[in-house]
Length: 146
Image (cartoon, rainbow, N blue to C red):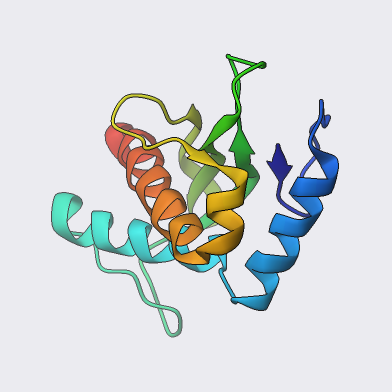
């Protein structure tokens, strides 16, 4: 199991492989924050016709937090392959008042390719691909109520 830094979750096994994967992710500059941000901007623009800007005056402020992310073999603990998981929440505020909030947790399942840790270690682009897919699912569910 690999749990991203600054998240809180117990490791049930595979800590050494998880540490190695963390090193590969850092060495290849795979940034879950950037992956989620890109997916969020894309989804807001395409499906909700909302433009996101980083500076200047805006109608509202959107704050997104990545609560937990990584790879897990849950619910099949004895299985040797892993799949991505991601948990995020978002708050939209206007004039210092919350006008929308949602949270989603996703252990991606159907349609998600499962990988051996060794494959993720050898081909870091599989990590990027897996997290991009997870981000598309989670962001879509998160924004369903906006």
